Length: 72
Image 1 (cartoon, rainbow, N blue to C red):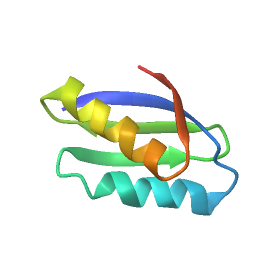
Image 2 (tube, rainbow, N blue to C red; image 1 turned 90 degrees about the vertical axis):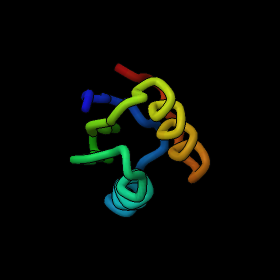
Image 3 (cartoon, rainbow, N blue to C red; image 1 turned 180 degrees about the vertical axis):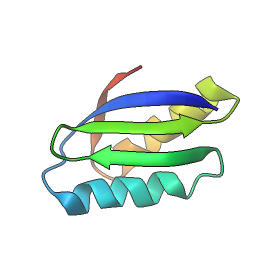
Image 4 (cartoon, helix red, strand yellow; image 1 turned 120 degrees about the vertical axis):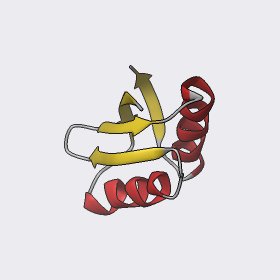
């Protein structure tokens, strides 16, 4: 598992972060998903293949109406 840190745009409340957390927690390749609407951050662990799964995570966030603006 590798740590993925995201900067997410468009979250305004706890429901926003809960929606992203719920969506990402459905993936079998994610663990310890923590999304914070106050600072627009996302932290989670991602299993291999890391790069492929990272793309799936970013796409999932974008599909539900938010925008990933930075990845580390």
